[in-house]
Image (cartoon, rainbow, N blue to C red; front, side, top):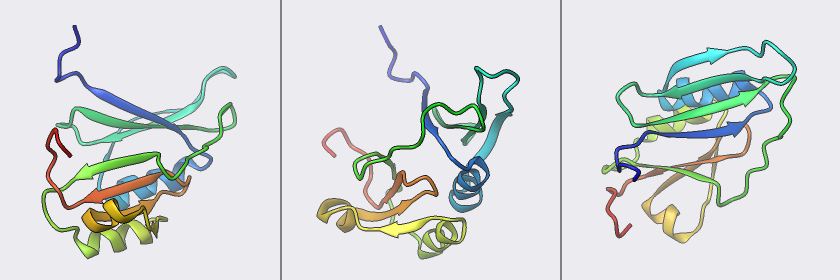
Length: 134
């Protein structure tokens, strides 16, 4: 049985690891938890970002050995439930770090702000609190 406290790692390919790391680290405020460069042709460069106390992490893979290019859709969302209004200075910082504010549809636009990262994946900052009925 899988425990509900199991850690989650979300892995995404990136065409520009430095730009995408800047978005999530300088823009969102995640910390670099691990970094590695490919040591053989069957490996890729990677950066793992997150908050040390969180049970989830974001893994970005890239470099010259990357076999899968980013192919985000409008529904590939990483949603953070802030339980508070979205701070305009956070959105501005994400934009300065390479993000682009986009619309995400009536529900998400009403309950938050959506910003695309440099690879086109979408980060939703939701003003709502998480609940099992959300």
